[in-house]
Length: 202
Ligand code: GRF
Image 1: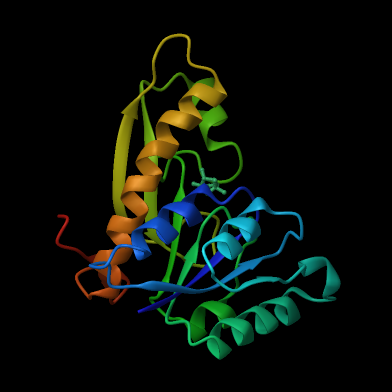
Image 2 (image 1 turned 45 degrees about the vertical axis):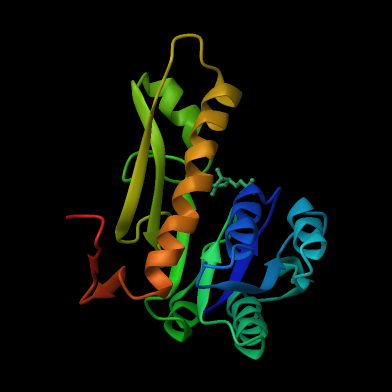
């Protein structure tokens, strides 16, 4: 299956997907990486892996719908079947999502529905939760609100700052995202009537 990965930043989750796709038994390849941020290090990671990387700066578009149409066109032209958001810091609207219905995934560094949006790890520390983690979910038009596929939990340890907790969560992100992508592209994980069907359980 051909993946399109959307990024805005460092791209460590992109790297985890690139590494997974490099394994002979992995049923997907990254066909295209698109960043809305021209300086994103993720672009370099893509090029280092021999993957086409494009910049599509949303600031160059008048309306959000125009940016999203151009983004969708890039992905479709590259033959992309599944879209993976990996630190992509833009919401996507119904028109875009409709072009890839049930085939857009995101990873978020909290146990959703707790702490959507920016700085999820800081939100978790501020609330004093004792368990944190990450979530892979299907994307809808809301902010980190789509149907949940899988989660991994990590402890919050005394003395944790944002960097320490983020690093502990990120390690789980890099494990979980390729696992879910594999299950999704092989049909084990799917959306049926707005609900997630998954061999990972409930
Ligand atoms: C990750 O924590 C991801 O869950 C969140 O943004 C961060 C991106 O990190 N959506 P990276 O760019 O993949 O290193």
